[in-house]
Amino acid sequence: MSEMTGDPGHNDALAAEYVLGTLDFDERGQAQALLGIDENFAAKVKVWERRLGELHLMVEPVEPDGRIWERIKVKIPQAQPSPEIKPELKGVPQESSQEARQQAPQATAPIPSTVTPLSPTPPPTTPQPPAPSMPTSTPSLSALESALSGADKAPFLGAAAAVTPAPTPSAPSDAARARPEPSPPKLVPPVLSPAPPAAAAPVLTPGVTRAPPVEHAEARDSTADLVTAMGRRVGRWRAFAVLMTLVVLAVAALLAAWRFVPERVPPQLQPVELMRLVGVSIGAGPRPRPPAPPESQFDE
Amino acid sequence: MSTPVEITWLLAAVTKGDPAAFERLYQATSAKLYGVVLRILRRHDLAALVMEDAYLQIWQNAGEFNPAQSTPLAWMVAIARRLAIDVSRRPQPEGAEGEPEIVDENEGPGTVPRHQLTDDLKRLLTCIGRLEPDRQRMLLLAYYGAFSREQLSVKLDMPVNLLKASLRRSLIEVEQCLK
Image (cartoon, rainbow over all chains, first blue to last red; front, side, top):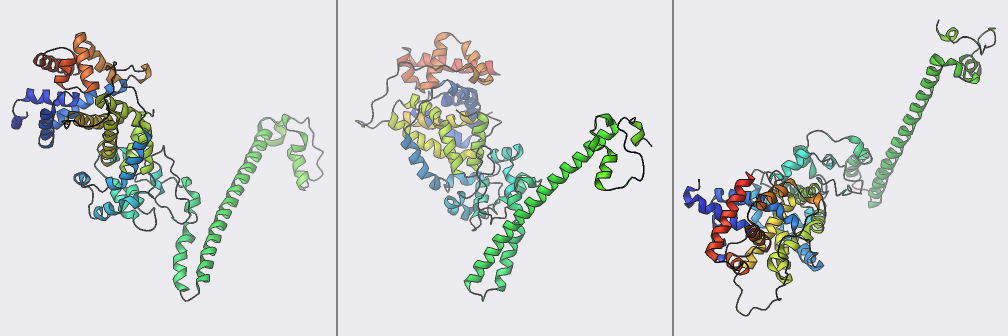
């Protein structure tokens, strides 16, 4: 097994005692040196960490001093660009990771936490980001798995793209990798629908470059107006659709009543009465006979 | 205390560099990690330093957590323990100032509410339970206090060589029992 380090039994014991915590200073140093060069030994340590890992459940929690978090918090941005992370980036396109690391402190903030369902991190509140990125807001387990497996260190990719002014366009690449199927559009209708006018606005503005800034403001205003108008129109159509659905349901119910329980239908809703009400003349036929047998009304 | 699933989600968000998720992760787990670290170091000043290092490592290495291999809390505890043991083994400079050690008679394990007893822990405790009582105590004391063999031999009033052999035999028996 661990031919390069000699006695396997010794290494087994060393790994176990390393995790248990009983090695003295020198032995611990020896174990840590082995960890760096001997994969076999590192695997043994992992196994023992797993074996004994659950013992922590029997440790009483102790609330730490609040100042500890304050100190950790200020160190986070510097922690991110640490060179220690470098080796784990393998397997991920590296070209942008260099700037990403430099920019990480600022860039990380605007990235919506795309994987966590627990933090319903609000999608960007401003309407401008036309958010094709939102698909990731529905996490999938496979995405999580890949994120956790260490195979991809997504933050850097995301951070790299997020350096551009618009905070969200970073995500599509993540989204594309993590979740190929498109997002359910109902998740973001308010964001998606204003997208066309928002995208159109920049096309308009170059045309009015010689115009005073007021014009720009107006253009922006009109875009905003368009957006709200679109939103209102969508709302109106939705209300209309609901109304029509209700009407269809009511008619269906009435038809069903005529067909199956005609005797229960109140007289003013009888077909003949209704037709008269609507103004269709039924000729000189006799008045509707409430006691008429049900079959006589529809079966022929 | 958050569930393992919640902590796993938070870790995933931390992998993406989400500082808000990291703060929630800290709030959800720091008391447990501090309890573990304080047991080993028995000094608040040292434990605080280890907590800082541990969470910075967690922030940097969250992507290394593999849910197939361990629970998220066990993974975080392993990081904190490793750092705490390193500090506790570091030779103290002569006459170094610092807080006095916390003296705690109860150095063994606490109790676990039944609903928190995971299958893995049950199996492990069953296997440890098969050792003779004094070897059970030795193993748990070693884990929770992370005492060196020399310290253990004083605590258990036992020659170091004997203790070392007994410790290793116990670990092998536990390993075979768990297989």
